[in-house]
Image 1 (cartoon, one colour):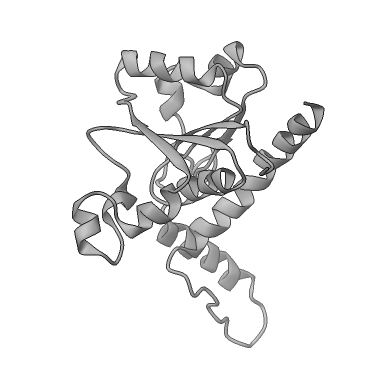
Image 2 (cartoon, rainbow, N blue to C red; image 1 turned 135 degrees about the vertical axis):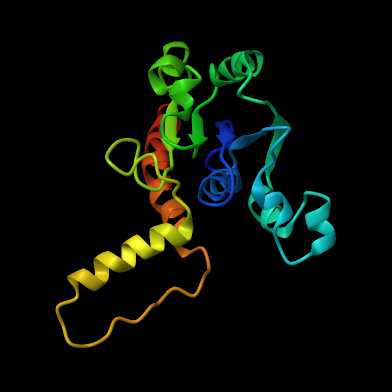
Length: 196
């Protein structure tokens, strides 16, 4: 038996950091249901080294982080789809999303609203610059985050030796975000499963 069997996760994520975080929960046994917009599928579906798979929306990037998940389509810009999602959330343990901050709120699907029907819901929100603050509305793609990180490191470097760029993965910041986001999700899950 895997540690999170019986845990239901709603995956509203796209591209990399969010889907990879949900994938890790699926590997640990959670029932992860990925929700994609039927008119605008996850960008990772057509990226990867195999052009034929990319053309069929099953690129290797998607296959790597989409395995162990079930997938449905809902256009959350439509009220009926939002009602379906709200019904799904009623018995979910975790909801993971990485929309720009304010998107769920504009759809009436913020944590306060969703947790009324499910007080134990754990909501993981991944964004490049946080949910509030002066940069929260900015898109949080890996290269932009990497530049911000390295600018801070260069400013902080008071030594005479040059800094070395250690990243060997083209999406290192996304991987770091995924790893950092899992701990605050896994700990309450662990506590909840111990009480069962």
